[in-house]
Image (cartoon, rainbow, N blue to C red; front, side, top):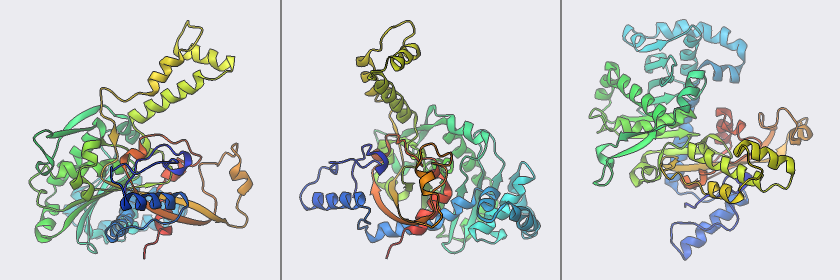
Length: 437
């Protein structure tokens, strides 16, 4: 069941009085209204068996997305002392378990990066010999990613790391729109290409080039005729995993393969028409947690937020605020044109189609049901607390999951924990709390 979002504050984009927007009525509308009420009351809405299976697979492949963070995520879970004690010993074991061809397709750019490979192997729970390709060297328009064969699901997994370096941040910021060709199976007479951010496109092109030039990967695919290709990642990795299937399916070597994507915390990446295409919705399963800020970050959404702030400040009665607005917006003017700022609020990206999250979107929401003894409740509730928004209080949580439309995330929500809820550990905890019969 899908419905439009609408900036419901901390409620994750569900506003009061909203009605499902697919144009249906009758019993279906009543059922959707019931689901909307369930979400507001933090009761798990009824999901179909196929939706439950998709979330179970998303939970399973999320471990690869987390493992792609390498030694930093290993240190976060087991302590920095374990990085030197445990991973240092495993570096040699990983290298011993690989042949010369594997080592040829593993790229490093520092000694610390060599710790990331055993961390990935340990966290993902795979033997070192199942690592097919790894790029542990980061640069502008080049991200860290791992390619491995998962024996449990008989699939080739491409796990892309999120933003962890200055070069990654620059890649994130390259948001100039550029076009890319759609796969033949998604083309129509009216539409043969789409648009995405320039930085994301260049990363996808590099990864596809590496996959095409990896003989070991092609031998595995020739041996495992039914093996599917799974792409997953978190944050920046979520953006790449949202786009990579389109680039893979453009290559004859992968067109006969089943390609699925499980982006976690992905930013908006493609226009609405492509994001909501039925075949794309079957191929891509995106997961968003609570008020995570990244799935709501786009040039369009940030511009709209800026204009909303300008408009609200322009309505302020305080002379000091109005003077600040006059100085910041109209130098030399003694007043702010409220009508003009209201027009700016209606910013609709006239020159560019706003980007949306790709595929079927599952939105997880969590509610704290009980605090642990000794937890800093009073301090956590204070706005001046330096750790507010950085850590979650210790206690018992209830997590629910429902399907949402990409429009749900077309507005930036300013929430206390919008950055903490973006962390892989927050998604991991939500997946653990989420339970389906």
